[in-house]
Image (cartoon, rainbow, N blue to C red; front, side, top):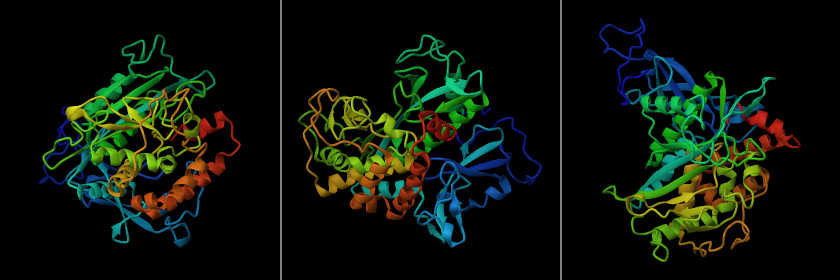
Length: 452
């Protein structure tokens, strides 16, 4: 257990004997190098400290040629048909993060190939999107809200919903979490320097909302990537499954990942402050919303990346199905928050946590930028209830294949995000959809549950 929340902390973990006597005392003896792939799996390696000091680890590029079921797919740019060459995960060994395993620090890596940034690296795609906004003197600021269900083993070893008697939306305490699982996740997050904003029971038990603190876009995605992995690993060791599947239980509410977005100027001020009121939207806010509306259908292919995602994305589901936006309206895809001043923001509500946060936020930033730079026309806000009556006919695709078709055909967005990344991703996802064609709800659950 770490004694402080800062990155450079001291604990009671013994130092390994491979450490030279002249080296300062360390509280760890290995580094866990992690990166998010196109399936949002935390790929990685453990390295002893003397190897981690090099700041790199080698991986097979063919990592980007496999589905969840480990089927090999000749996806473009994956190297499967070119001898499966190596790529390099590059990190700064002087900037390690506290880990949640004994004697272990964390390195979040960017991927390089042939001496340059790998085109399939989602984190690098996010960095490009951030840089594109910084050309306008603006730094993207992001807050991510995730939702998840907890499962426990049934009498026959199957996963069944966690028994939470008396749980309700915005529930807290032992009736919502009788085993104290969320308490453990919260405590470990603090020890690891992962900035939790809030945790509470969501609409249908045993569902929880897990929100991370607002930050610059890269830090926000790093934090969510690590928090999700940490929470899932802690609970599985307790015999529980924390599932971020979009719709793990067909008769209960779906689970999403809401992306809250604003921009800071060079002085750190939120430029959305005073610019998000009804009839008082700034040109920046208008452009960002217009871009997200214009590219709505294509964004579905990235933000809703599984077959199961389309069980959640339905009319009357408060999930971002329709291509609409509104002021403090939770039945739309893009909600302009009622909060003002430093907390002013827009909230994109379509995505789910099967998506890599890096890839998802990169896509949202690029769509918003295109709307701002190209001056897309902004449609009228949703004035109807968004459930029984909706002011648009446009909506997300009915299935993953349809969403991928929309994504492929949106060449402007594809080029903005990175065409090789999209080509590889679409190929893998089409193979995944084919694997699950005709499968039952329980078979789909068992396919995704160990990974999402």
